[in-house]
Image 1 (tube, rainbow, N blue to C red):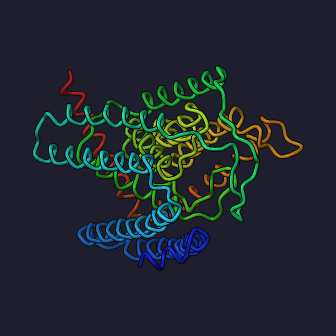
Image 2: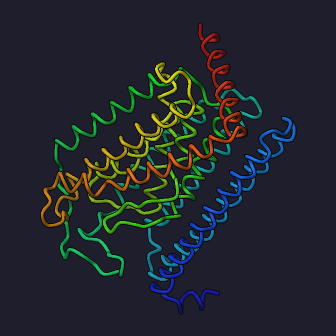
Image 3: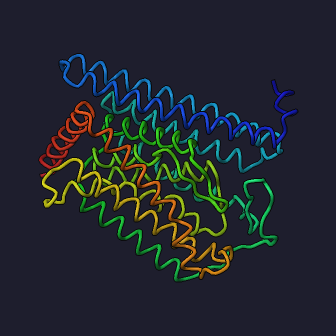
Length: 386
């Protein structure tokens, strides 16, 4: 098998990746349509049947996501091997993934066995994860100041390491403050239980799988995907903004692992954990009384706020770090706003798919049941703290 892979070489593997991604896009669209039709057909069945149906749908979605990640991940790994890029950076990334898997597994086991020390164990893992991620960012060298076009040719023949800029740090700090305050005000005090962790892991995995299914990619980074942000937005809407922001940060680190673009340390933080942390604010509209509890309006407003904030995060990075690549006729600021409009296209797709899904009574009932359980858990936590 490896002999065949070596014969394909980098161009062949890149073409195979493109073909597989396009095929996965069509299969995903067909699968979503089939699941929506199935949900509509069974909407009037009894609750026992609907419970089994929900488990079946969840199993199909998780299995399909695992298959997509495995197949495309195998092609990406093969390309790295052929390129001879299996270096310290690669093993650091593998170690980070392994640490995350071990942390989640140990925490879930301790919670299942009702061992109270799981909170301290989880905190220790979080601290270790952050330290490891910071070390990894410092070790991975910055890339050349250029990018590959669709034909694989290198553009902008210069090496650029972006210097420090206090204004970028200021805007990043303001954005972090907005996220933190919104997350604090957007949901009540809550603790992680096995349900929240399990749903969080599933939603992060689904978003990660869908991020490989692209309508198109842009030459300087960024892509329009098949609603890859939808699972994270739904997770925030169901479990609250605080948990949603944490899930978004984890997803942002996975995105950095998937395609690390390191030009400047603050750029990494803005483009990955900070930008995707904004997706955790999709549940903030549940507190907007003027929406009167309308699930469609709440999801639309919340997801719009979250993804628009992500758009501004990338605009900040684009203005301060990628301004030298602005097309002729654009200023650095106008190019940053125009280039990152792909986020708004992503928003339109997320809203379209999300509202179609919520049109199903089965999906709405599942979302509302989870929200009710989360509310009861939060009330129990608040009473125990009194």
